[in-house]
Image (tube, rainbow, N blue to C red; front, side, top):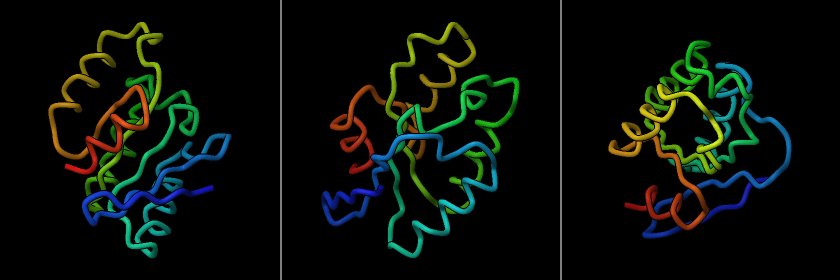
Length: 118
């Protein structure tokens, strides 16, 4: 299920359903095409919407999926409890991503919306 937010005139899609939405690069492309038709350029997903391999950087799934978001000029915020992951590389990746302008990791919806609305 998709809920839309329109802060500052920008349209942000928030996925509120349960279950894995992204488990491959093709899933990301399909999602981006669907959201493009809804005039969105930003999306909020939950950690639980993404296959666990995304958070294992050695699988390259995160890089491949996030590259598609970049190619389509989409911004993404992922909400979750990331401290449970033991990977220093993942934590470094999250910190660096949050310094940028297109990929954000947040701990709640308000934080995700604030990051995407600016």
